[in-house]
Image 1 (cartoon, one colour):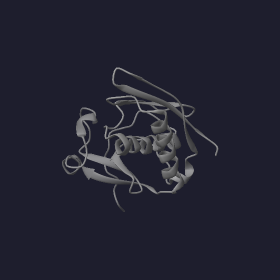
Image 2: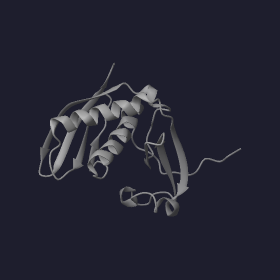
Image 3: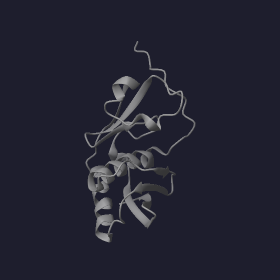
Length: 155
């Protein structure tokens, strides 16, 4: 019987479709704007928000492109899988600065098909087909931070 790796306890219960969608949004922003992952996140069942450090505000067309790209990824029915590796192995692939102090030596990588992979201990769907339609409900830009608020809706 394979033994589960020892990980830090997780103190939050995410809504798996929204949390997995957050991963897709992060990768989409990296791909489209060359920025890092969100500098701040508030992910909830009904509505969520992400803040990204950007040199200028995205145009209305770029915001529509973000939405279309995320929905295209969701529609591909990608598997969402996990992998366990050591922090030492992870250091060459990921920014470990966000790991909490005293993080376990073993870390978990969550992969959304070949689209995204990141360190995460949260709850996720097993396939992007379990995520509804991504909709940006509002956004603003102030002092180098682009904030988007979004929800998941029926197609």
